[in-house]
Image 1 (cartoon, rainbow, N blue to C red):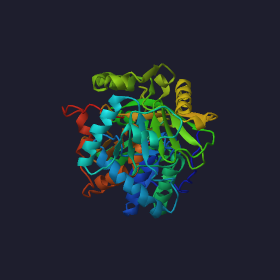
Image 2 (cartoon, helix red, strand yellow):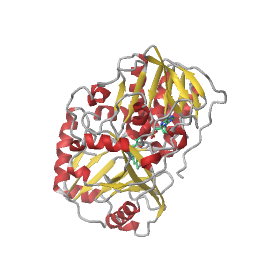
Image 3 (cartoon, helix red, strand yellow):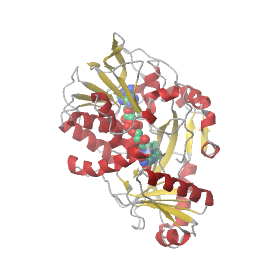
Image 4 (cartoon, rainbow, N blue to C red):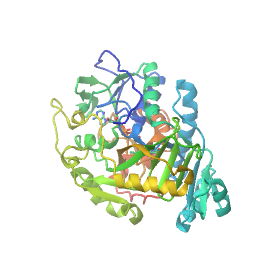
Length: 442
Ligand SMILES: Cc1cc2nc3c(=O)[nH]c(=O)nc-3n(C[C@H](O)[C@H](O)[C@H](O)COP(=O)(O)OP(=O)(O)OC[C@H]3O[C@@H](n4cnc5c(N)ncnc54)[C@H](O)[C@@H]3O)c2cc1C
């Protein structure tokens, strides 16, 4: 099991709050933190532990580079927020602005980066397209020759084992209540609007509820007939042995993506590849939007039939709120890593960086990534259920985006003017006849 920093619960269980946040990943903890520091009383509940799922399992890249143009303003705001949080929280989240470097031998990727850099510049983000000479002098020595690259010096990295716990700690300092091992089984409704949450420890009354349940959000929403379209894609990552400080920030090349960790090792993965652990709800969503996933995304996916069909976040069995729910049957979702991806990543990084010839994999793990058909998150109110909000479907980008997403949700929930345009993130885009955006880069 992957280790994350431990955060202690609030000792007494309270039956009321202004707002309940379901899910203590980076999005839920950032939301609870932003609400609590505005003086709102918040209860943050998680079926397992703070940061136990995606938010403690990701690569730790905090990037603006290559983000969808609709997502870029959120990413830019988030980078600023990451810097501020270190001072505000007085806890080291591991955030370092060391830049992100991509290298490629493939003309198609370079052309995509070039087009992206031009569009990003229009919204105020500067990143540098690198010629073959420039990338080969910047990339670690002794590896293959690259045809080009892109360098975003303002991007950063952070430690997944620390970030959500630090935000939860910060929320508690501002008075938020934290209950772990406390699944939200369903919403309490009165006169057609939200009036609380039925948890496994009892009812908590609240007039506003935010669902930030990551891979489980779709199923929670479905129980209330709210259509949230996402498919879980399992990504594999690994921690290497301690190795020379050849790459200080993040570096991706053919077949690998690498981040320097605070412990002197690297977090390593194969970019873009994943696995779908087949299950009824995910399958239904995937088939409905199959054409939206371009070929080069589809051919990087593997499919597996496993017990996830019956027990995973996308299984179909329903439940009553006074009985054990699927959420508490799986405290921490811990999918099997894919050993083929582990081998590809390690072989590729050794080819690219000869200094890493002795590198070993110390620990491999996986995490289920809640992926929307347009790869843009859902940060939205739910028009059919007044008082209910969702902040989910971060499609592999939520660690970096989390701090600003928390601010945006806090704006919505308190009725403040949102800090940026929220229309691209609205839930209604799946049902109001909008044609969904075809995903850009991952
Ligand atoms: C291998 C991998 C690599 C990634 N790399 C990056 C990266 O480098 N950069 C980046 O920006 N993003 C990355 N991501 C994506 C990023 O980790 C996620 O987008 C982000 O962590 C999502 O945060 P979250 O809070 O929405 O969800 P999670 O972190 O999954 O949190 C959801 C929480 O909700 C809880 N929960 C669910 N249902 C209930 C319920 N009914 N009651 C109570 N609690 C509930 C769960 O227990 C969980 O703790 C990666 C993801 C993976 C798996």
